[in-house]
Amino acid sequence: MPQFHSSVNPSIDLHFASPSNVEEILSTTPDSREVESLSTSTIPNTVESKDDDESRTQNIVHTEVSDNIEEPKLGMLFKSEEELFSYYKKYGKQCGFGVSTQSSKRFKDGTLRYITLGCARGGKARNRTSNVARPRPTSKTECKAKINATFVDGMLKVLSVHNEHNHGLSPQKSRFFRCNREVSESVKRVLDTNDQAGIRMNKSFASLVQGAGGYENLSFLEKDCRNYIDKARHIRVGKGGAGALREYFARMQYKHDAFFALMDLDDDGLISSEDTETFIWLFETWLNCMDGNAPKAIITDQDRAMKNAIATVFPNSRHRFCLWHILKKVPEKLGSHSAYKTRLKSQLLKCVYDSQTIEEFEKCWDMLLTTYNLQENA
Image (cartoon, rainbow, N blue to C red; front, side):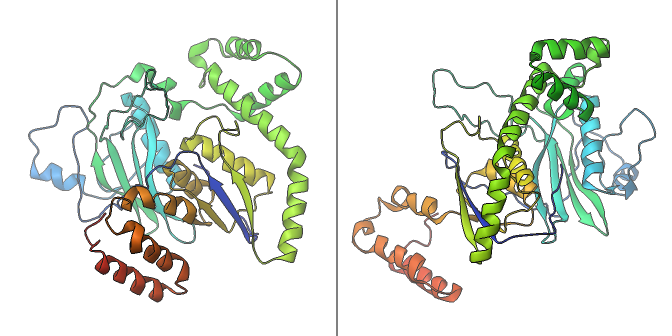
């Protein structure tokens, strides 16, 4: 995944808010003391010698010497995040499963601390549509296949491996998985030229198919081309106002040490969906319009997809949760408490708004928990 670094970091605070507030889910840092390794196939091996076990924990610098990609093993070493992702993606393509980044953590300087790559069908299905009668189909099966790698001595070292899937694998369909579909820069130029010339997408795609000698020789689908053109059109429209936006930010920064730029992501059609991929596109587009100047701080609600996108596009920006969104949930969480409407609510707000230091807040918070017996309240 691309990382964006800026030599200029203006004091800009962005405030993003999505219509759906998703509870924050904290990913657990892989523990190097708890190392796990399971078999590659969907049927676990029942016999393993001591020598085999010892050999699997040796440090192995990964090199690709043939088209046959070896299965993940403990101790594998990779020079970079890109090399690790490329290896696991090729392994998934060979076996017949899609790959995605499930979690990652970075140091303050933006370098990778650890990363978890897993099967794209991992995780729980989340129904993001309000139409109960026609829920969106999902491919999620809570598959546990994944690898964890941690930055050790200048290399990414695989410390945990789980190769068993809880679903069927489809090597013959691997090229259709999202992680394996990519529109090259040369194809993008052709699509841009044709689009600005008024040529319809179906004709552009048919020309690409003919030039490649068939659908099977393309690394993308027609819908990938349509998605690219949709985003390209947004960027072309956005660039018209980018100059004025940069001038406004520069003028405001000259007058004030910091300020807020508000972008309210409501149901006005600004974005088509609220997944990580869409937010990454949105933030990368904004960053492109701002000549690569990332914001110093970003305030959002507790939307996990937005959180993952910010970590990817703005790794050096400080990400904080919006106080208004947090307090909006207080009646839902504590409204049933007998003392909520008498003293509990006012005491809680006093802790939040009247504390000027960390110590003051912690002291006030401890008193709140003790007074209203909230120690066991999640």
